[in-house]
Image: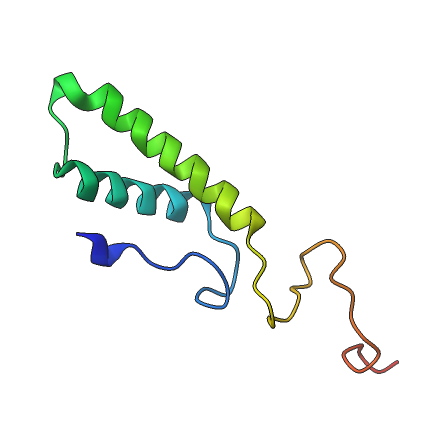
Length: 89
């Protein structure tokens, strides 16, 4: 089950992880930890809250991670090009 959780940060994926990818990883994590693929009706609320909490923590983690040695991505604020990287005029 956990094998389907993939790395959600560059350079493993070229773009920022989508909300859908983060939620899918959170769901797989909660399934693995709980031992349930789908919770019984009486456990649905706590299961869903756990998925929400893990997804939120994952999004916060990914937003704060700094990958040293990686080239800054153009979409990031402050990711300015050096003279060597700038396109020729």
